[in-house]
Image (cartoon, rainbow, N blue to C red; front, top):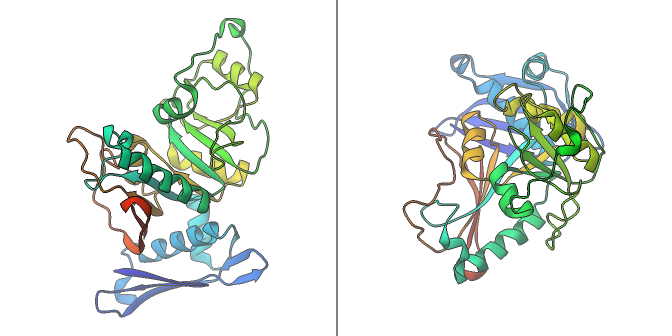
Length: 312
């Protein structure tokens, strides 16, 4: 099967090119899109096509920064069951053999291609970017651990802490709340990351003294699970509490794989460096299952990089 997106319509066609399903979502007001009609051929019903169409319609609306409405009963029921979440684009730089960590990133060619990646990041900038704890620490905090002694025995209000609304966010998936931020904003030479308000996605097992610390420095946090992060719940909260509609997922391989296994990756933006990495380096998706994507575009960039965009 293949999905074809036009401005206000997504069609599903079989291998012979015959249409077997369709969803329409016209723009009824400026920036407001109404999912009005979903249909699937009678002989193809019960195969997940309708849910796939609605999911793709919601993602497409979010990528446009639009507001989702649903006047057809199937879409209403889908949203009631799954909620609304940002469209997730996994944006990564890889070697030819699909690795995302290792010495190849620090070679002369790897550094040059990484600059291409960052330029593309600025070009396709969404409402937020997201990384796992290890990536956040290596990229922004250098593993800093704050002194929490003043917060021993602190009593913290229950629930999420929304410190502020902002134009752009850095979302840290950090199960136990370990990332030692020193400010509520990221300060970086790259304008694609500078001035992002930090949101920690944590579990209920996060120590209260760390919550008190985050509150003191103005870092927002949301709870998503008791012991392990419920990614779907986290995305629902990021959408509803912060208005995040387009999220760039930027590694590492463990969190990328977790999103993919949950069916929460809507597209790929892959910048491939003309380098073969070492065999022990980590892959784009750790522990992934087989998933099919559609090639939307591919461009040869500077320094031998190839930028490929994939959709569901």
